[in-house]
Length: 189
Image (cartoon, rainbow, N blue to C red; front, side, top):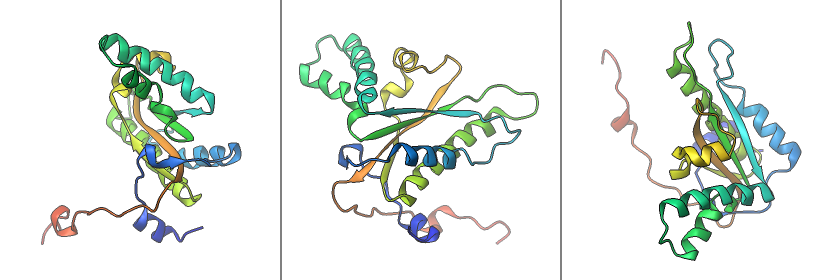
């Protein structure tokens, strides 16, 4: 298991198409989700939840994505529809992080949304700690109400992201990161 700071320093997203089997076991998935849920949560609301897409469920969900795509693109070629059908099958495991943020008398909705984002990032970090790789993305279907309804996302919920998880097929290349001088202001300096 990598040192925590080294893991955080070297974590890098891997495109879903570059993730292969093996993916996490059922026990490892439970570990990942338990860690993902250990985030700041003002008011203990748990303003997020997870949908796990593994095995054939990835293809079943893909049917819903392809159906919505085809409805919007009736002239789409068969290979384009096939691509949409496989959106959640590119990696061995996909976890949707669902934001359940809602008006609350004491807890601002914005804090609840941020908590869902923190859950997604904890999930990504835990994936790397277990020796796998991940990509946290949203694509068009994360905002399509027909697809969301088919996936069991309620009208008041939103997708914070789909986290694609697997084993990288090749070494991961580093990308340029912003220099601290570009992103840090020191108050009072």
